[in-house]
Length: 259
Ligand code: COA
Image (cartoon, rainbow, N blue to C red; front, top):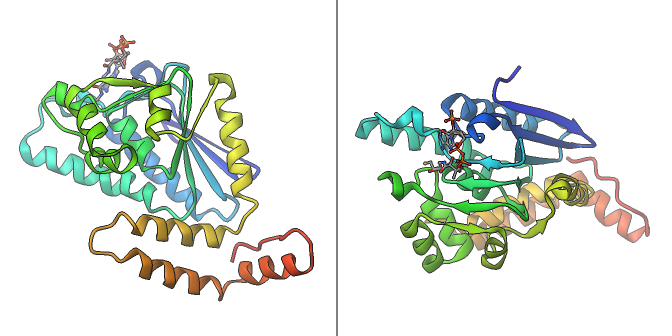
């Protein structure tokens, strides 16, 4: 069904794997469209409560946008590339109601790091390397990297990473707070699945509300506290809330209907 990605579903967790290892999983136009479709399908699937995004092979998560596709673009084509990509994939993932974990299994460069940063949080293998090398190509990050990197690591570190176009290793990424956990490569996916397993035990409706409220803290012109109040109130009208509170009072485990 897809040419550049693999999708598998197990135990309410959908894993999306970018599968162009010979090009270090670089994001070409078709891959971005396929990823959009796969995230959309997973988000609408009542049997998917968490999504893991990773790269195939042992070398790369994603080594960036596919440079061969945009090397001869004009100014307007460049703007359109960034705008379309942000809308279809990067903003789309950030605002998805299903939680998304990026499992960074190797190089996450340029659009690859931007993809990982659009996920709700990140885990990485010890061999991972991350960077935004765009200025070494005469361009800047265009898939949200200049906005999300300073939020995650702070302005000074983001400036240094972007200006030097260098890579940081997994330990430095952990120290920067860019990734939450470092794991041996062969344990990375099982670890991400274990984390997803903890998430899916909770109310998916409440988690979607929490994603909206947390994202609101980083949106210009939006009062995050008001979004929190609204989302908090909405929870009281859900079946999950009735089940969660009733189960607590009855001293049993909640079995959330996800509604
Ligand atoms: N776009 C298109 N193709 C890419 C790519 C990208 N971002 N990154 C890697 N590839 C391709 C290479 O062209 C090569 O293809 P080929 O075998 O047909 O020549 C293949 O993937 C393997 O990459 P290679 O460079 O040979 O591997 P390496 O181990 O020597 O180097 C990197 C690994 C990640 C350091 C190097 O590939 C690199 O610098 N990639 C570009 C990173 C980048 O600038 N990304 C930001 C883009 S905006």
